[in-house]
Image (tube, rainbow, N blue to C red; front, side, top):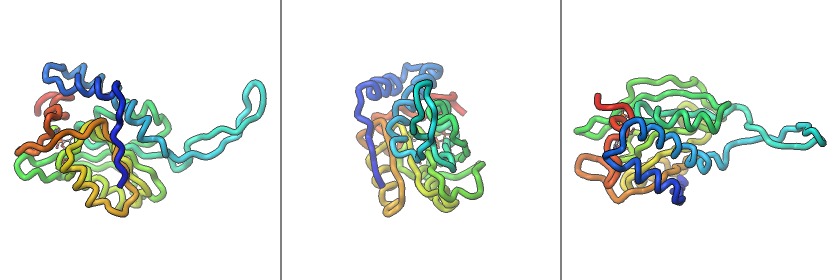
Amino acid sequence: MRVHVADHPLITHKLTVLRDKNTTSPSFRALTEELVTLLAYEATREVRVEPVEIETPVTKTVGIALSDPKPLIVPILRAGLGMLEGMVKLLPSAEVGFLGMVRDEETLQPTTYAERLPDDLAGRQCYVIDPMLATGGSLIAAIDFLLQRGADEVIAVCLLGAPEGLEAVKAATAGKNVTVVLGAVDEKLNEHGYIVPGLGDAGDRLYGLV
Ligand SMILES: O=P(O)(O)OC[C@H]1O[C@H](OP(=O)(O)OP(=O)(O)O)[C@H](O)[C@@H]1O
Ligand SMILES: O=c1cc[nH]c(=O)[nH]1
Ligand SMILES: [Mg+2]
């Protein structure tokens, strides 16, 4: 597994505002979208392309276009939905599939409560989006799901990760074509499985308590 931690002052600045407990839901949503755009720039560095011939007003030339099959973006509901708009803006021709997952706050085990994905993902590059990589359980389950459906490659885009979760994902995906791109790797997980210093519950901060 490849790991890329974005090291850019604009990303760190926006994350700082996101972490602040006084940041309201509307600002949190806007910042999440801005952050995704910056992270997606890094995450799509290896997006598959092919040459295309075009004609400029001056001459013929060869450029590039996204290859078929187009990439698949997979937000992990709920919190991953907050990253979808930003990702789709950068990859407008991508398709979108959905995975609904929730972590049991006692056992920290994820369960999948919804799935809407193409049956066959053979040859697809899949971009999983979820702001938080805590114990890694949800991301491991999502990656497993996509690889079992035949995905060629999985690129996960997360705003924050914990070192423990990153290690768990690394161990679970050894030898697989998986990349994780993050805005920051924080200090640790606390006894409730929350990222420290973190930003709290991303789903609640985006959409309110349920
Ligand atoms: O790495 P893990 O320990 O699995 O934790 C991370 C997961 O927890 C959060 O979702 P949550 O279960 O809170 O659901 P929500 O998005 O509906 O709030 C987050 O968005 C990840 O999906
Ligand atoms: O810190 C955390 C851990 C899991 N899920 C969140 O939303 N935040
Ligand atoms: Mg949540």
